Image (cartoon, rainbow, N blue to C red; front, top):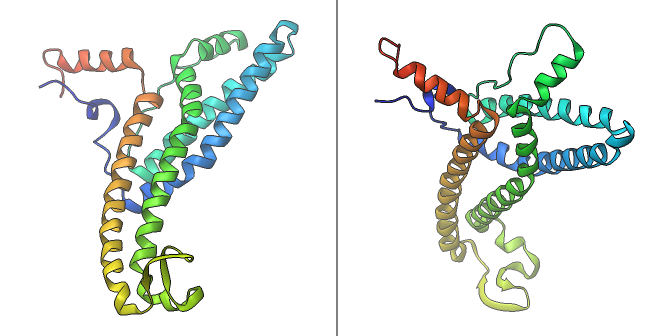
Amino acid sequence: MGPTYSALDGTRPRPPVLGALGYLLCNLPLGVAGFALMVTLFTVGLGTAIVWVGLPVLAAGVLIARAAGRFERARVYRMLGAYIVTPYKPLPEFGLKARWRARLTDGATWRDVLYLVLLLPLGIAEFTTVVAFWSVGLAATTLPFYCTYLPGGAYFFPAFDERWIVVDSPVDALPWAALGLIVLACAIALTRGMGTAHALFARAMLGPGPRARRLVESDTERPGAVA
């Protein structure tokens, strides 16, 4: 039996619900920041590279991307329970030019950049989905405790001026609370599933590249290799 991802990156992610929830909610603000930094730095840097002014800007973009990649690996490990192997090639001990050449020719650097750009659309989708399910589930589950304190002394569905359904007592709110529990159960399963999916995506983007994975698999499959 050939090696799986666990041979390189640890076991299959099994994120805790609260960890996954916090992680997914944070992806939107971090995605906005990462997208803005990468697009701004690389656009300005490339646009002014011809007069050398852009080179320090591009260098800053590369260093920030690699630092953000390290931060994201730590965040995935702490909140989602998924370990991601550091993918960077070793830098030469001497020579500033050689060290920068190693950074720029390392595919892991550019996967860091791409991950930060993609984190924005992913963060929007994840944040919206999580907030929608949890807010609806919590609001419906706790409706018996606050329905009589709403304007008009009742809950009106779908709106105050369109009263298709009126819930004006805790007893009337019990079916809604039961529905809310079902939505919360779905929210828990969805949160863990989305956390697992994002951990696998982060592992593919921020971990060792395809060539490194093939080398590990080749070494593992050799006769006498330790499984």
